[in-house]
Image 1 (cartoon, rainbow, N blue to C red):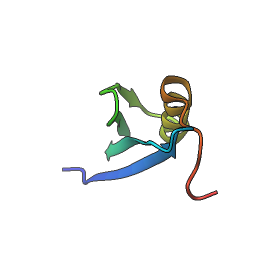
Image 2 (image 1 turned 135 degrees about the vertical axis):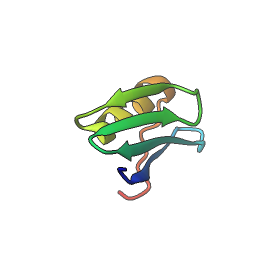
Image 3 (image 1 turned 30 degrees about the vertical axis):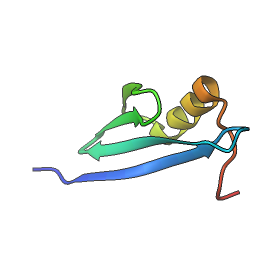
Image 4 (image 1 turned 90 degrees about the vertical axis):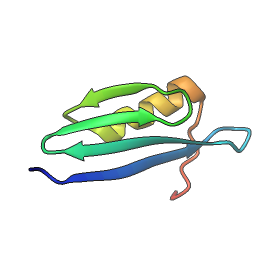
Length: 67
C-alpha cells in the first residue's frame, strides 16, 4: 500500500488573501485541490508548477511568501 503525503503551494493576491493548493501524492499520481474554489486536477508531472499556474490565473495570487 503506497504512503500518502501532502504538501501545499501558497500564494497571496494583491488584497492580502491567502490561496492554497494542496498537492496530495499517492504512488506516482498526484491530485491537486484548490481550497479557495474547489478546483481539482490530477497531475503526474510538475504538479507544483500547475498549482502555481492555477493560483496565478484563477485568483491572481502571485506573491510567494518564501521569496
